[in-house]
Image (tube, rainbow, N blue to C red; front, top):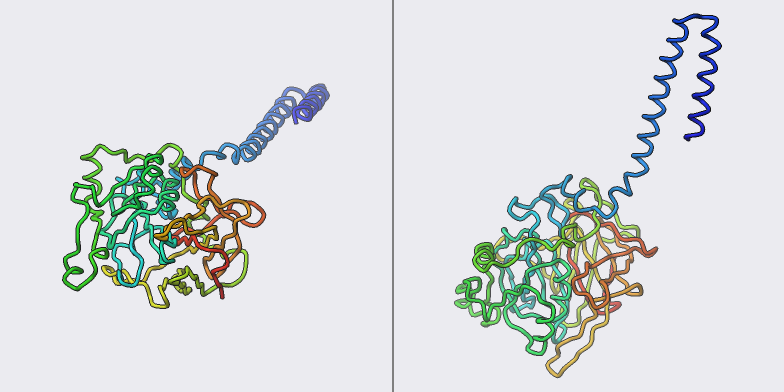
Length: 382
């Protein structure tokens, strides 16, 4: 480009020189003016081209700044701009929730931004409900105990981890994670209690524990616990499509999903009008006891992994790392596609990542997500 510009300039000067002898001073000034205007146009065009070429490189590695500029209050779990000002740049919250028939209906789960469902003893399941705005966590019931593979996922979001009870055999593991755990048995901050209405109705004691998320902010302040997100967690949790986009996965049509966990099932039926999948448990609508709404998700993920029983009680080992060969399925907007999933080996603090079959990171629709981590070949799509 530089050589071409020099040649053009030389040619222009020769032309001006020849014209000067014939047309006088006015002709020379006109030629000078025309050459200057053309030069400015050429430089402006080249500058714009260079800026356009450099733009992706300039943005690469800086999704946080770009997201903040476009969506100052973006919920990093959903990609939706709905955070309160006080929650911008703050850590999310993960709450362990009972998910068996005897504990239904749960409450506080309809407000969750992400729900993980994973088998526990006897192939029943448990929820880990995640909330992107730590100032808006509701009362959640019924809260249950921790299993090692749940914080292995929550740590990737830099979340506070809330549970009531623990598998004693995993204390050393949890200590090694160095996570901020809020535990119902030892907590004296008034965050946990028993739902008296449930007790009066005859619920078993283990199905009555609640976590009062409305008191969380004051508790964290009083204890001086870090609320700012870690520097490497200030970007969106997933790679999201555009704010106004609803992209159908590159696979087959899918309006119905059935997942078999062993002792219970989860079903999702597509609501085309609202572009969400409505959740059922054991073929019955799963309803939040306080809001009266059925659980609904923009995105449904089924991640296949290795699950085995490790002791006489029935506690499980679950491979939470995944890898290139681990299959999953992404369901959204009336379609399903096969994917792969992984976290970094031996690094609970790493992000959970999704990839298409070509190995490219998957872009997902903005909205709430449900993530099942389950045995292989236990999901059906239609």
